[in-house]
Every structure is written in structure tokens, then in C-alpha cells.
Length: 530
Image (cartoon, rainbow, N blue to C red; front, side, top):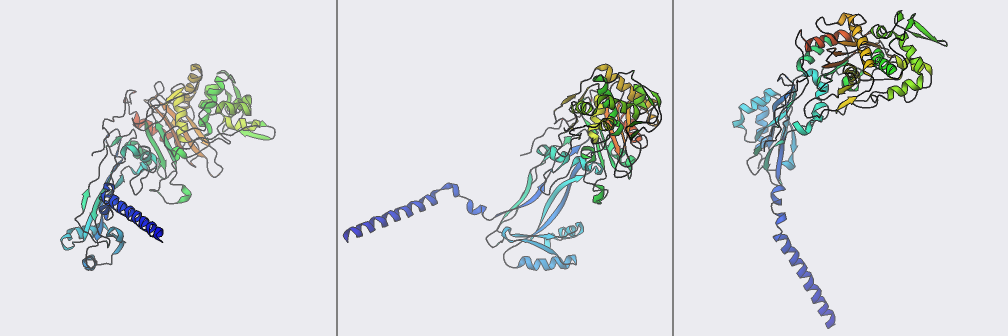
């Protein structure tokens, strides 16, 4: 009995000691100090200010738009309820409130700008109102919708350049901080922590070219991609329509056609086919055919768009003779022409750092000779994007190399090369020059400028053919490579070529031209203000 009493006393003493030590540890632990304040500190976001995109002429492509959100503090007593009645009487309509009781305030919903200004002018009558500045990005260049991209409600870039440069132009969130008790009643005056504005970023996109492109496209659908193949700077990445033009989902307004639109290249692929055929020894520049308007493969008829008669290399490019290129495809064979195209490294890859770009596509395998004939004229199971076609034009114009497209100095230049002998490039360039001087695009020539191009008419199983055109200019010193696609517009010479010609005229007005030494002025340093 005595042993049990001693055991009970010992256990009781140990329990008391443990409880005392635990309590002492809690009241002396500094890591928990201040947690009681955080439990009722309330934070209301003011939004995030983002840096702006500026074109080479200093025009803003995006800007900052400031509005106001009105919140009502849930003070002690029923004062805020009486003020609600007075607000509704002042505005002459019922007001909707979204209550955040755990944060100690309500947000007033559905107010127009005029309603907000009325409440501001009468602020002295309402002690419980707080006007929170709300900042958001404003798209100034509406025609740039696809390439600039979108921003979330939290101010995070979701696509386009907004996502690509989010770590550069993404600002710091501004907040309004106040304290409330467990019942949601405000205990202190709100403290405002202003937004922190990052630096703007100078990009190579030209606002004036977007306005010109939009005026040329009018109600057409399609895309333009234009860049400098010698430094990679993109002047124009235009897609139409955008959600600002239409909300009809059948027209795919969300699709960035310049980077993600997949089209059969049609005859715009012929310069690449011609170059590879010369490089691989399939033909030489003296190879000639007699075009009678079609060739026959068994019972199948492969047609040309005209009867060209005796046709050699440069004429085949200038007049876009299908029969000439059918013969190239036949000489290659299905497997060999496919392997030669794959060997360029141009298919199945991206040319920009934008996540929405889609790689161009080519068949996995080719067995039948008819496939080779179709590939030779850019038809069949081959799909390319406008950015792909612009890079192709730049490769030919620069005789085997381009700096890949980029949008500012924040992207390091990367060079892409495609090997072929200089004489082969010279021959293809001469053929593309004749396209403009005396061939299918002679109606789109620029009197004061010598440049090369290639028209294309892509067969479309879902409707009228697509109109395509690629070009590089000037001929001897290419400083622009451009691709234009106009959907369901017929021949490339009818729609796409004239649009490209107007873009080229704007870039090279008379004797003026872009110099190779031109760089995008990006002298604004990026530092968050602390």
C-alpha cells in the first residue's frame, strides 16, 4: 500500500514538471511572437502593374489602365448597414455586395464608372467606404492581340510576349492592409502599399506595320510573319481574326495563325525542293521538261495550272510549273524526297521561344511515287506555319543561314544553317527574282527595289484554295523575310503577294532602307523599385 502511494506521488510530480516545462517553453518561445496580429491582418490586392511593350519608334503597344474597386468596411455596430441604405438611395438603385466576413469587408459589385465617381464625390458622407485603385494592363495595339498575349486577373502573363517576358515585365503586387477582430470589425486605419512598377521593354514589333496589315486584310482571314534574317528581330507577327474581331468559334479567333496555323505550303515549298534537288544531284540547272499541262502516273492525272512548254530551272520557279517539279519528285522517289526534306532539320521544330508555336509537319513515311510527286509541289501530308515559310525565305535569301526570330534583346541570337553549295542558292535566288520581275508575282513588283519571292496556291479540302506568298528583300542584302497566308483567297498572286508588296514598300520607302547595323534600342534597365 505504501509502495503504491510513493508511485502515485512520483507520477504526479513528473506530470506536473512536464506541464510546467511545456507552459514555460510556450511563453518564452519568440518564434510565436506576433502571430496574434497576423491572425486578423487583412490584405486586399490592388492588382499588379506590368511593364509596357514599346515599339522601335517609341509607341506603346501596351499601357496601364487604372480603375477603382469600392469596398465597405464592416465596422462595429450597424453603421455600415445604415450607410448601405444611404448609398442605394444616392445611386437610385439596389447594390450587390460580396461579403468577406472573415476579412472584415464587403466588395460592392456591378458599379459603373459613373457610380464610382458619384460615391467618390460623396466620400465624406460614408465613413465605411474605401476606394482601392485597381491597375490592369491595357492593350493599345489591338491588332497585336495574338502576339502580345493575355494576362490573368492576378497580373500574370498567360501567352505570347506577356508570358515570354513575364519575369522581366511582371511587376510587384500592391496591397491595402487593415486589421479586424474575430467578428470582422475593423480595428485600425487601412495602410496602402503602392504597386511597384518594373521597367518597360523595347520590342522589335512595329505598330505601323500592324495598322497597315489590318487595313490590307480587311475582312480576310490569315496571317503575316516578317523578320530580319540577319539579326532575327521580328517586325510583324499578325493573325486575323482575333477575339476583338469576332466571337464566332468556327472562325478560330483564338488561334495565332502566324505561329500555330498549319497550311499546305503549296508552291512556296518549291524553292526548298529545287535547292535540295540541286544539292543532292537529282537535277542540274540545265535540266528541262516539256510542260503540256499534266503528267500521267498510271490512271492518275497530275495537272499543272497552265501549259508552259519547254521549261528549264529558272523558268520553272518563275512560272511555278508543276510538271517540272513532278519530274523532280519522280527522280527522287518517295522515300528519298521525304528523307531529304527531313534532313533539313526544318520540320518538327519551333523557330521562336513562344510556347504557342506549333512545329510544321511532314509524313512519317512515304511509299508511293504519287506521294513524291505531291510533296514536290508542297501538297499532300505536309503542313507548314507562316513562321516556317518566313524562315525558309530568309534561308534562301541569306544563302544558307538565318538568325532565328526573336522579339527583343532579352533573347540571345541563335543561328540556323542549311547547307547547299553557293551556286545552288544563286540559282534558286535568280528563279525567285524572276517570279517578281516576269513571273507569277510581277504585278506585285516594287519599282525601286529588287527582291525575290514565290507565290503559292494551297489546295484546301474544306473550301476555296489558300493564297500564299514568301519573299526576301533586298535581293543582294536581305533585311526582311516575309510570309503571307490569306485563307480561301485563291491564287497567291491575287491576294498574298500584293499584301507582302505593301509591307515591303513600307519598310523600304524609295531610297530608305533598314541597315544591318540597326538594333532595337533597349537601354531601359530593369530593376524593381524597392
